[in-house]
Length: 127
Image (cartoon, one colour):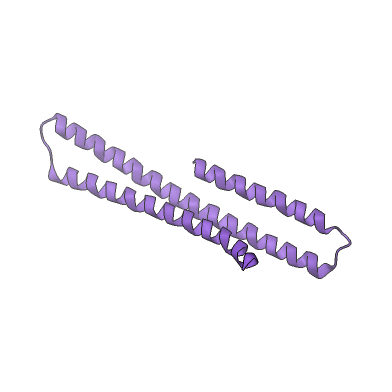
């Protein structure tokens, strides 16, 4: 949840920078220069919104996987307490754990892609 809040904060910060950039250009600036800045800023906002949607979908997936894992672990504890450990319950728990690890990997991958996307324009300007 904090990751989503952090990303929302970054989007709001980008929008604030957009406003400052537009104020800096001023109303008397040449149309093409202002239009180019506006288009670039719109592209940035679109990219950040897509990143937020992707992150939210991955977080929802992780929550579902973790919920299933908690349920299977509760069933394992109950089976163990009753003295009847079932192989299919153990298999289900291991599958849940594996799914959780895969979901975590996808979130980390999305975070890396987001960082790379943010660095790309900076590197182009510097290069």
